[in-house]
Amino acid sequence: MNCGSVEKNLALFLYGELSFDEEEAVHVHLDECEACRKALAAEKALHATVDRQELEPSPALLRQCRENLRVRLAEDLALAGMREEPRRSASLFGLFEGLAAVFAFPVARWAVPLGGLALLAVGFVSARLTAPVMSPQVARLASEPMSARVRYVEPDNQGRVQIVVDETRQRVLSGSIDDAQIRRLLLAAAKDPADGLRVETVGILNQRSAEADFRNALVHALQHDSNDGVRLKALSGLKMYAHEPDVRTVLAEVLLRDANPGIRGQAIDLLTQPRAAGAASDPKLAGVLQDILRQANDGYVRLRCERALEEMKASRETY
Amino acid sequence: MITLKGKGGAAQAVALNPASRSDESALIRAAQSGDAAAFEQLVRLYDQNVLRLALNLLRNPDDAQDVYQEAFLRVHRNLHSFRFDCSFHTWLYRIVTNLCLDHLRKRKVRKEEPTVLSTPDGPLDRMDTVQEERVDGDPQRHLFSRQLRVRVREILEQLTPRERMVFELRHFQGMRLRAIGETLGTTEEAAKNCLFRATQKMRAALGDFL
Ligand SMILES: [Zn+2]
Image (tube, rainbow over all chains, first blue to last red; front, side):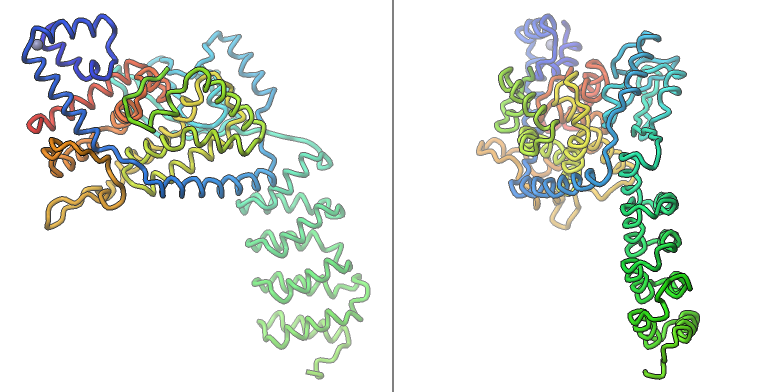
């Protein structure tokens, strides 16, 4: 080895990353070359300098991290209990393994050059760690159940490109509304943060609002959902049950508290509709309507309350 | 077997001997079957090193804590899919290094506030107020002024995220280049080149100090 290649290799030499033969050659050269010994000393000084840059996390920071993690894990478990964690689908994995056999590509995750493009999946989702690297047309086929997002693109020094992709495995389930798993997922979807998903889900729950678990979910949505559309839809699903005491209680509450006048108006409709047996003599409802009149809501709701009270022959002059 | 520089506690979790490797497998299997205590033990095998890596790469305790939380949450969510076809360390570090690289890249785009601030009294390192650096009694160390430390830090921040990552993993976490390649989804050779470029840049920038 000459001075140039020794100097080039000093860093790897110090890290013990040279092959046995290379390391031997560096030793031999160092024994006879003063200049390279100096260069080695400088390299060691560089290491020492860098060593002192290292930060040690304070015990307080570590403790805080561990405590917060415990909280986050508990939240995560609670969430997982609510929405069934999609497990790896056996059939999907069968598909991967089958494709691997047919196309004879290696079941490995390392970069494989594909006509000037290296596909490299770097990420965290379970699927990635077991999914094989696929040729483009296979990738299209098998990537259907995935949602992927390109996070980063980087050219390498061999004229290829590395693409970092985040992938989320998705799974399609289909089944009857009577299926227990489908029901669980629907009930979880009714509480999902995505407004659109909740609107859709409540629409499905409405079809079977006779069933107790669905009706409870509708009642919950009507009382607690932040989205007007979801509450309105849940309300329409409960129409048939406006005569039942528990639903009436909720409707009365909506009438008092819902921020949306349209929803309050609909609640009055349901509470006072003719088929709601006993509406005329429902003293609780009369009380609620009178409360609303006192609170001076907007004109439309007031008008509806007055009319409903008249129909119930309850006298508002008593107030 | 991963060899480590003599860096005290930092090393323990990585340098597992075969006996403790099987202990680790048992922990993983227990955690996979929902044993929360086993999961916590598993976390504690690695979390100090993970936090140190994140802190040193991101030089910001809040960002380091973000990476810590997100990494172990992902481990928890995806542990059922871990099939022992690589070491758990590699699997975990894929998650951690990806999160850190994301942070570093975002920061490159945002041009975040530097960790070194200029003050009338000379450069002040924000981290000085937050974390203690390794203390060393050797009087010769005093030759290395604050100026030098600030300069080293500036150079580290000028490395590309990948160079920085490989350097951290090799120099501070004591990982072999082959393991680093496996973790970062690249070859040993590519990791070697990154390390080479990183040390090259530092040598060039610090030449006159050394
Ligand atoms: Zn020489």
